[in-house]
Length: 252
Ligand code: ADP
Ligand code: MG
Image 1 (tube, rainbow, N blue to C red):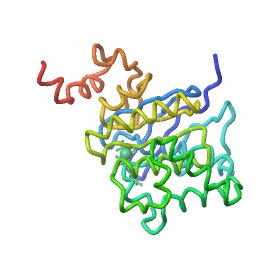
Image 2 (cartoon, rainbow, N blue to C red):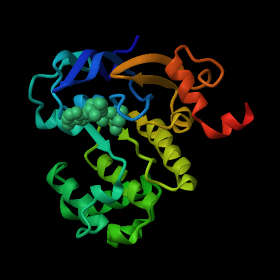
Image 3 (tube, rainbow, N blue to C red):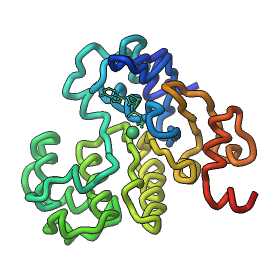
């Protein structure tokens, strides 16, 4: 068996009164898309923040390619894991053009010279299916879907191995959600990128992921496959998430 890119072992997180995570185990295979689905407050974002190192676990450990992270991540370790958030409006600086955002990362972090940074920025835009001319655009002039693509290009600019997408389609029009999920699938296939896709929306998770983890009250209560989850759920929480999908409810 291949060594997981990332492994969580018995991770627990406590915020004052709240046990946000309780003995969570999770392994991510290289170049896979794993989905985390659960209702609001189930601990999904906390799980992401443990992986990025923003939240120190009260117990358990995070392993990267079989080796535990220390208490403080190195700069190199931080670079390998990038996150895309729900709200691309909040996460992009309105005063910088798309090109400026990308070329700054490319010159500072990846040490490109100015000319090759501009070429690489155009390549990154192509990779997220935006026209190269968009280097000169300001985020405020873009649609929600385009901004989310820019946020994904920015994450890719530092060439991460793991991309965490925390509710990446929740603020977008229903019509563009699938196109963003298609992009994650393409990036995983073309770049061998490992993706952790987090959503409260089981339809989105089933569409993009092979492997699904259902979270409830700080625990992973069910592991299921996308091909199986609508036919059979192993837990009441899995069944509740399936029942919560409006179009399936109408059929029943
Ligand atoms: P999800 O992303 O699934 O909605 P979260 O990980 O954000 O869930 O939250 C899990 C639980 O931890 C919730 O009960 C939430 O209220 C609590 N929580 C999250 N962040 C904090 C925090 N910074 N301080 C205190 N409690 C928090
Ligand atoms: Mg969340």
